[in-house]
Image (cartoon, rainbow over all chains, first blue to last red; front, side, top):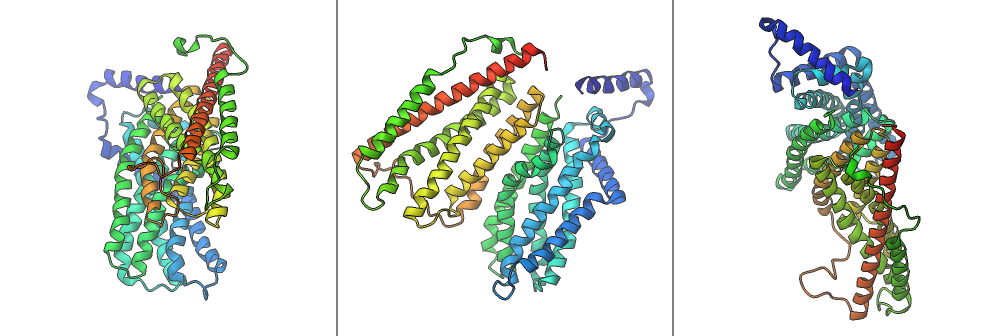
Length: 251
Length: 233
């Protein structure tokens, strides 16, 4: 594996030096990340494997949960926030595993690692692609849940979107790194949830609590603490996981 | 492989420290059961305190701290000995955490009237248990030694970052766990004989911890030496 990684870029470099005038300029971190994210999104939109699976799981869970509790005993408003966040977490896991899983075919990962771009760009690109997937699933599931559970929350839809974005970033930051770590291990599909779920606990707790307070029409200052926790988690884990990716991708 | 780590030590079947630790724990338990007064309100259930509290302290502070520090140092120095230390601390720490999680409910059922409650400390311990279990599963599923060490060190450090977040998010729920009664700013509010038993018990469990980590570390060293000698990596 490491031999391929060393010879790969070296060959490209010698070719490039002989044709100095045609030497391509390596893309910047942001451009490289965007290119990777766009490639993943295009692949995903053409195959729709992870997207449809995650959407189907999410919608099915909403339906199944409806029959798992007695709506005359427990109000939908009390259960929906926690339920939605548990559903997003599990449906997100389907996509997270795929981001690096698709690169295993034809050893595409080696080409990605050999490319003249910073390792952080690979992580950022994969995370962006994952975030798009998670947000898309939320965009469909939240209205679906509102309709089937008959929740009147039109006035909090914007702040709810803010919570979904903050929590989505946190889930994806950690999940993308663990997806990268587990794809190169045995039993990778089994290992990802075991590693990722404990790290999702603060995100899911904070997002569900904030959602519950918003939907219940509680004063805004009751949700601020949870939002701060989410924001702090996002900042720390985006930075830590981007750095950690450069360590684990270091061959 | 780093040659400095392959210095051959005489292989002993039974580690002296481990044996001493086992005897010390047996002695401490004997003292706790027969030679320490029964607590007036909690009755015999309070005896669990002498196993539960030292195990919790060693698991959550010493073992987890050792795991986080050796993980961080490994990423800096890339010394295989640090990886073996992280591996040993994680495994023995998991055993101690399991003792904490098993003895807690037995006491809780008698004194609180419930086996389990989603209290901040209980939840944090449970999630640390899951994280360390995940770390050991991750280690088990990677063949290549340096990759295993790198991945495990990354996870060990991230876990240390996660602890304050889990703590914050679970602390906002009402907490039921007894407040610290020994390690607190004012004087310990524990009768002298009970405090002595607790300290003896703490020393015994610490000795056992050191013995177990040392044995586990030696096992890891021998295993790595064997793999290097076989030329499998």
